[in-house]
Structure formats: structure tokens, C-alpha cells
Image (cartoon, rainbow, N blue to C red; front, top):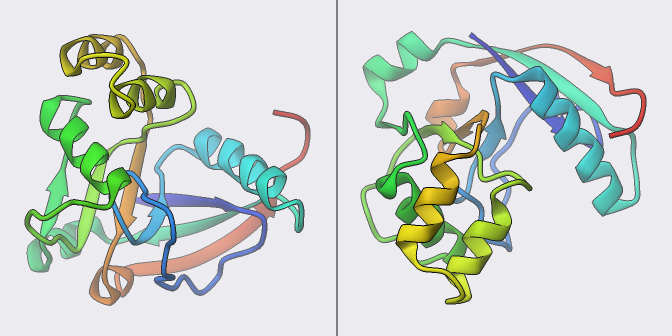
Amino acid sequence: MLLYHGSNTEVADPRLLKQTRGLDFGHGFYATTNEKQAKRFAKTVRERREIGTPIVSVFEYNMDAAIRTLAVCKFEHPDTKWFQFVVDNRRKIYQGKSFDIVVGPVANDDVMPTIQGYLSGFISKRLAMAQLKASRLVDQVCLKTEEALSFLRYIRSFEVKGGR
């Protein structure tokens, strides 16, 4: 399978870097099977960091082999288990099972207000879930261990042109 990683620089040799903020699936190297999503994220990262160039790095990932040997968590839809997993990871309080790979919907800019509304106590979990089910979300793949990264093979990178 092809995976795309958007950043403000080429990432030919992915590494697991310490994160200071809570991310959807916790600490790890994030990618997506959706090239358009990676392009959007590359532009976002470039804007946030105010340095570099929006670049998408492309990888081949042997998911079949990884699934046979690693602990994988896959969320098919933004359901209540996914929601709680994302909320706990964003709060940095997740205490459940450890995984090498987590796959599922990305809590993108369209759904972050819903999650933030829940985290702030402004909306209930039931209302948040109803709003999320109406959203069309693309996927993300979080490689959380060196073992998970070992199934990744860099192919190429390209610069993202144009506006958002």
C-alpha cells in the first residue's frame, strides 16, 4: 500500500520523535493513504512552522506483513471507541493496550471543533458522536514503534504547489 506523509521538509528516513502535544493516536509517525490529505497537511505544517516547503513524502508499506507480526488497532469508522481513543490520546491520558500501528479516521480541521467542544464540556459525547458520524473523514496510519517503521520503504518526495 502507498502511504503519504505531509510536512514542511522531505522525510526520506522517518523517525519516532517525541511529541509535546497530544495527537489523535498518540506518539508515532503519521501518514495517510489519501494523497490529497497529505498535500493539505504539508501546507498546514509549512504555515504553522513558518519555515521550509510543503513536501509530501511517498512510501510503500507492507501492511500485510506488518499485520501478521505486529499489534494493530484499526478503527473502521468514527465510532465511540475511536472517539474515546482520540480524546484520551489528545488529553495524554490513554492507559489502554499498546499498539505498533493504529489506523483510522483523522480528526481533521472539520471535526476538531466538535472534539474541542466535548473536551471543554460544551457538548455532550452523544452530540459529538452525532456530528462526527455526519463527517466524511480520511484515514491516518500511525506507526508507533521501530518495528512498525521497519515495514516502510521510501519511494520519493514532491513539492506541493498552489494554495489551500
